[in-house]
Length: 189
Image 1 (cartoon, rainbow, N blue to C red):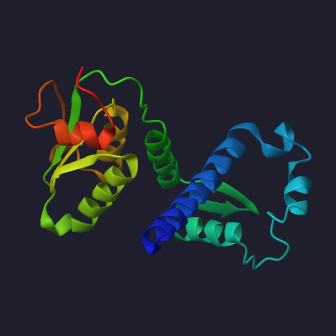
Image 2: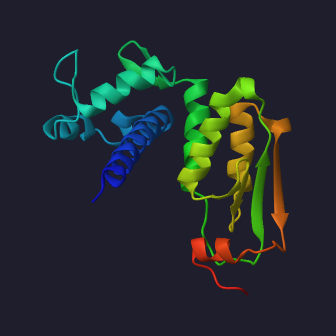
């Protein structure tokens, strides 16, 4: 396995861990971990997932501190709470993971964006998100996907505040789409 594959797997594990922590905090706020699973803290402690010390150097501890530092979590009275920014991030992650890959309906979802140079970091984040979801690049700011992803696009527009800079299209015919069909493993209907 190459270095790129290893690095990609490591990034995916980190992203999944962040998603897991945010989802856990969200669930705890809604259900109350101690009510839903009263033995959960003891089980997590035995598995080594709860910090023993205030300065926890475990992977979960480091990730939790990073999420607090980025403003996604807030610690009040020893408990973690999801911030509005964290709620928006988890909604985006849920949309990424829930893009359904059902039977292809023969139409392409094309996303076009024109984000100004002074917002280059946002543009790069959008490109990375689209790659992570599985979009194929047609041109620098033109991406295609065969399945319904309207919810994800709506969240991207809201999360990055780029509504006017992004155009989502559903295309019935696309010239030379054989490359896309090959990339997604699809046959012409």
